[in-house]
Image (cartoon, rainbow, N blue to C red; front, side):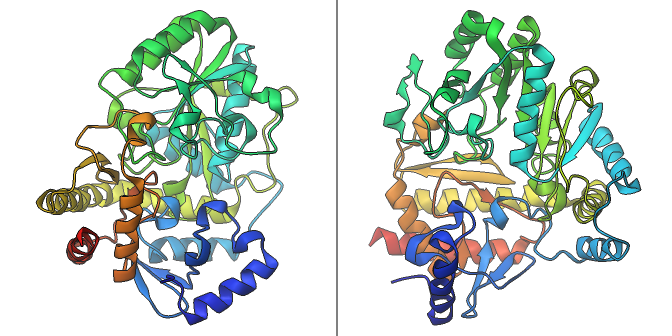
Length: 435
């Protein structure tokens, strides 16, 4: 039975007449189960048929406080009355840069609008800084929609990645020029040996190593102890720029992001998502010597809407709340309760599984008791059972992503009552799939 009620179905049919496949992002496409959301408040969203869902997708992670969070909305509304975009710098941009520098222990900041823009520009900066062209990325990691990064992402099949000892960059989209694959080395995450041998053999060509500190598109799989430190060590040894993609982890797993959480400093860091609680805002930040490579007339970086008043105001409000209220502590606390509850229910049901990630951004792999350390390990899980479980959850009013690669996201609005309701729903959903 489709998730679409009568009103949703009618609206979606109209959407498919006007928009390719009825969505403006392929990640929102669930076939005949594609939903339309009319509003959100706190931890909840509603569809046109009046169905209410506890939201664990949170717009793919940006909503750190809750949907329509009043303090953020009020700040944005007040700011845009004075105009939304100018061809000059605004005071808000300076204030936001100061906050990011202080909170994240970086030297300089440039604003962008989306995570894709931030990671795209970061790679260009690294290439300009080093005079080299190639880079390393890790299997199962997603760094946005620009051509250079669309290789061996979480959209790849395990069989397309080649042998672990000699990985193949798997192109995940048509329309990418054939020779772009020549610029990327794709490696299994957490594989010290492959990493070191690849860097030592190719360091003279490597501009950057780009890494999500945890696999934000592969159930939140964590780095092994010492792996991020090994990347840092190799980058220092061979003059390679370490780009830490914190689009998902920034201002979520710790106030200072993954750099603070794991204690490893990057040369360049990219932020987006939780920075603005759902408003479009992103940033590139990093060390002075690397950021100053963005010399006007020499290295291109720009955008009509970079530093726009809407995104900047939302980010200022969000960071002010995160700095001065126990938001992330609450998220970690309730997220831990949810993770432990899910673990207990699955264990009591006799369903093999392993919990992954951290409380603010977590997942679990079904069908295995083995701890996954990389995307190949993740692919050994039971995706069909996971999807069956999620559909049972959605029908009962709790909505994580049906794709287990996408983690569960927590917000400050996911309070004790929300967690209790979710665990009750989860227990009922597990009973259904066991039948």
